[in-house]
Length: 328
Image 1 (spheres, one colour):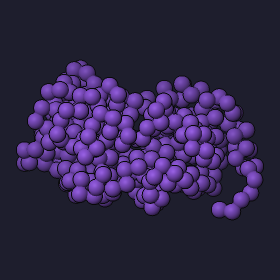
Image 2 (cartoon, rainbow, N blue to C red; image 1 turned 135 degrees about the horizontal axis):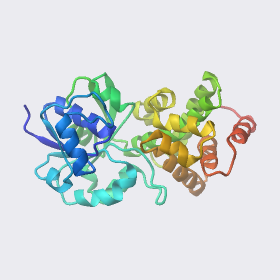
Image 3 (cartoon, rainbow, N blue to C red; image 1 turned 60 degrees about the vertical axis):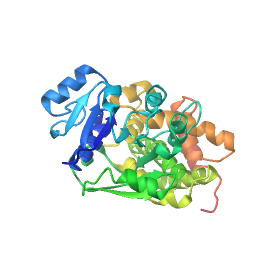
Image 4 (cartoon, helix red, strand yellow; image 1 turned 180 degrees about the horizontal axis):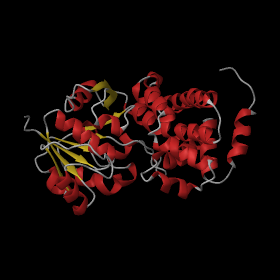
């Protein structure tokens, strides 16, 4: 058993799944829950029944609600909380020398920062890595084969962060395109809302395929405008994550879009999901970013208009379909 200890912040479905991967890799894992009550229940039951029911946690995975204590002597920290919690949590990580692996996806709706930029406000750039790609937590927790991307400021740093996860069913590819990986993980959630809306309206596979394809073009357009590599959008953290989130039944953003199409309000639809819908905040940020950069991102901008009650969904479909024809 490897005596290296890794801390995972966030005992939701994704944080618990990553803690399981690390534990299967032989690490000593400390998973940080939001409350003492949640920590006690998970430790007692050896299962996180609220988020990953029926998944047994190994003995080398322990849960606490004490973030400061959990970080003492850690060799790495995995941040698996929503992006919205970053401003409250990241200052605690600022003074360490261990790598911090961001396992969250989104854009800040006020500052428009990507995940890498948000983390860099508090943490030295050479300590930051991003983990992103097509990975439903429930399947990762069950040990089903998964391929994902680890990005850092250099390939060597990305590889060092990836080496923490040595589970044979969790394959990690390295990248030095922090911008592209951060944007791919964030933007695909907005497109998934669009795909869910199409499903909820009763449209067929053609509509979802159109959303995926045109959405990918918009993702690449924004990523390259921000300094990322268009090739990254063709990889796991771009196209791979996009396809999964737009078509998978476990996708929160897709289910949220379908709930909107069924007639629920934004708040009611979000409550029906029961977990954070990152695409909701990201759609607002993308609309602001597109306006600031004078970019045409019709699908994502239209999703934002629908979610902000500026445009009825049925009219949004007509608006998109009646745009002037152009070369692909």
